[in-house]
Amino acid sequence: MKITPLPFIITLLSFITLFPVSGQENPDVHSFPFHMEYRWIVFRGLMNGVETDFVFDTGTSLGMANSLSGSQGRISTTGKTMKILDVNNEFKNADLGKTDLIQIGGFEFKNVISLINDMDLLYCMDAYLLGSDIIGQLNWEIDFEKEIIKVSKKPFATKDADLVFKIGYLDDRPFTGLQIENLAYDRLVLIDFGYTGVIDISIDHKTIPYFLAEKEKMGQANSFYRYASGALGSNSFPSTTILMDSIRLGQFYLPIIPVDFEEKTKSKIGVEFFKTLSTKTIINNSKATIAMDLRDQPEFEKSNGIAISFEEGKFLLKGKPNGLTAQDSLIDLDEEILSINGFKAADFKNKCQFLDWYISQRPFEIQLTKLDGTQLIFPRINLN
Image (cartoon, rainbow, N blue to C red; front, side, top):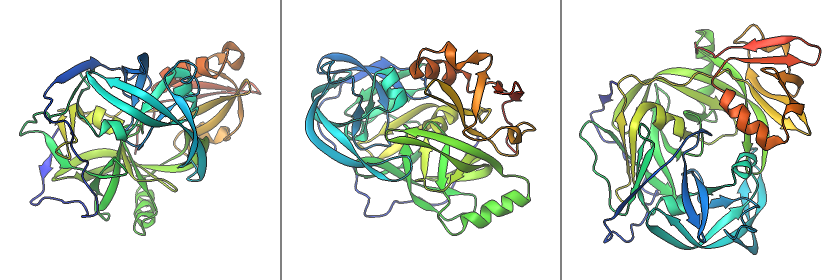
């Protein structure tokens, strides 16, 4: 992939503090496999000696366990709570728990405090959301081709040809600077491996509504209703996806990147950005840098734009394209659906069985049958 260097170095705001480095006298490197069946990076570790699936999420300060973890010996409740933001940007209380020992590779982390909450998919996976309080204490080499992770207390070597950019930290979470075409330079863009998309930008900046209106006039705006299901609730919301001519990351320009613009969101770069653009991504927390070994011809995954929830034994439409296909005006948000690709809600024992199946359908053409028998086919969408 062609990248163009800028003639100067971009620095983060001075109030962003770098994560302290500890234990660098240990040079050991440990490696283990991961998978992305659920679009997250998932690997095995131990919590209080109990084998556990970890979901790699740099976008959260604290880790999060599900309610099954207590009875399995992975965590004990503290009796305390913490206020966290839900998907609607509202504060809600979540219980806190403590794990005596978390083990990742050969590294140990003692007396780890975590949130306890049942996010649907994490509960179904019986997984633990690993947060930046632990991720930031190690350096990570993520090989997307081989699906192997290496971790170390010492930084990993990078290549001259890698795209390398600086990061800073707020509440243990990594942030960087980003500029999209000629819009204002955003110095606080979260590196969020828990976000399965590419790039998500808040439209709160005064120049962005005008920018989106101009793209709409040129026929370059792709409108969707998206669906987010998080730790404390879910919602549907309008989103505009633009296939950008270029973005500036660190010292480099990257061409042809899909970017989502939304209200009530925090600007972030997701795991799909790194997975699609690089064969290998190195997060050197001890040097406050990220390095990407870029692919020659990256291709972002196409989606049908449909989102379905399984609630009280029913299929409900929660997300769809808006004016991008001949079919999307023929079905409404929150409308009940009879079947998806020939499967009815009664074919699934519970929400977990449905989610496991439905996630595998996301990249493909999908057929929905309405309650009146009308069949609608939604293909994978080519962005304008």
